[in-house]
Image (cartoon, rainbow, N blue to C red):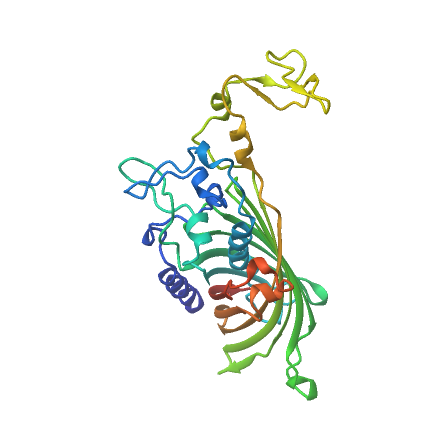
Length: 374
């Protein structure tokens, strides 16, 4: 009964630490249609800060993908979604079972243009118009998880994770595997040695058509438990982690408020049988010749260029080297943990001095979890 009461109190503390979704008004879903190198191609500014971002401005020409901004945005979200590996090196043991709740808060480069343009921002409650720019991105990405861990023979442990990122539509699914290489010695010469484990994890998101984001990690961790008054154990731990970030965009329409078919006066594809095809042209000698049957749009008085305003960003493949330090206090079957994660090197250096990431700051995560071991 005493352990159950402590678990209830710890859960209540975690819920107080977690910032309510309603506390911040700025949604952090991706708005990749704004990440273009020539924003005049689609942006119509208004005095209220809301308006028609996706109306094509023909005078500015086609919208050009800002792949650098996309990479930087994925870099930020990828760090926040990478596995936290929030546990000591000691496993739950053969037949052991753990249930826990976790909240993690990751710093974001909120003042950067790619964050302001690449996230949705508020919706005008009066007109339901979207923002043309998110002027107040969140300072921290907030992720919350429920985790189940199960121990198996020979130091093997598996875990499953389900969670979400606050102020976004991201649902997070993941799994972890860990192998304890050295654990369980408590007396004699070997009793002074720390526990040692290696592990890995994967996290992926669902809930948004604009972004596919998956992170994979590999870590090495050391820990040492210290018994306090027989019924309590405090376990500090530290580790190194390599995280790989895989980010891909969906098909992004940068001018969603312009219909390319109507803008073009679309007749059909440039194939035999389409009215207006073939279109006249000249060969190298100046003689008339038909346009090749290339399947491109045939327009009746309009421009086909808005068809080119739908594209996919270049795929992003990044690495982050991270330092993990934390501690766990366990009383009987209930525990409370705190952890800090930070970059060992800045993102550009971690990716071979990537020019696209020059000047992007390091990130850090503070995480708290509560749970019970059976």
